[in-house]
Amino acid sequence: MIQSRGRCVFFLKKASTSQVLELYRERYAGIDVCAVDEAFRLLRHGSQLVHTLKTFFDCHGMTSTRFMVMIVIDLAAEQGGLPPGEVAARLDVSRTVATEAINALVRRGLLTTAPRGGERSRSVTLTSDGQMVLGEQLPKYLSLIADFMRRNRIDAAS
Image (cartoon, rainbow, N blue to C red; front, side, top):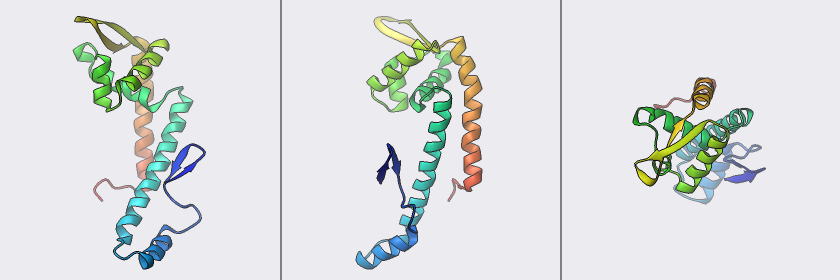
């Protein structure tokens, strides 16, 4: 993996991955060139998709973490929201990361918090503005991913 202007690049732009791997197969016995080449192909696509999604989030004043927080909370709407620790667990991020994202969304008026059961326990829910923003952005986000997959002919079964 090579760092390039803050982004991780998983491939060499100027060299053919297959040619590079063939060179290394000569040096290091046992390299499965086809498997590694396929993995590099998937990493290239992943890197391109991450860049595409980052551009989407930047245009909407959002981050992927904040967007995922909104989705997790939306999915728990019938439960009356979630405590921040549960949001963190469902996203597999630290409580600090989840809390920072929640606080940023509260400041934007997209989430609200309310007491939940115990004295320190809070429940996080989407505001009506949060529901509207998610309702506008989620279909675009999903379409962007589907379009990317179609353009790149990435088959989930392969």
